Image (cartoon, rainbow, N blue to C red; front, top):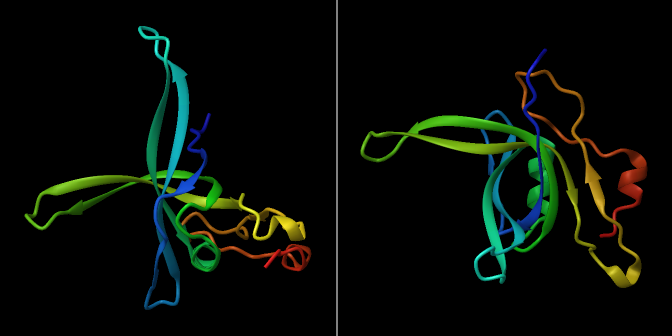
Length: 147
């Protein structure tokens, strides 16, 4: 049986996304989202909250949508895969970073609730395993954009 590498997160951006446009024309967005869980402390009985920060990478169309619509505090649903990359710091020491590479994104904030704004769900077109995902909006999704 093949392995499974799937991550599903709902959280809020901690800062505006950083988007780079590469020489080959591709765009890549990097941002961090916070997820929080509450639990009851067994010793004190108090309600506690634990927050985790997740590094997200979105490529091509998803990066462009991220750049256009997401800001610090935006609530998003992310589906993706865990990827770990190796890099060297300024002292030449090897470091590892684990990130979620987004395959799908659903913006959970409403642009204008008074105007009946709806959530926007974006799923990239089918891609090969070697190519980062790119987003394509269907015509009915474009017509439903609350912006």
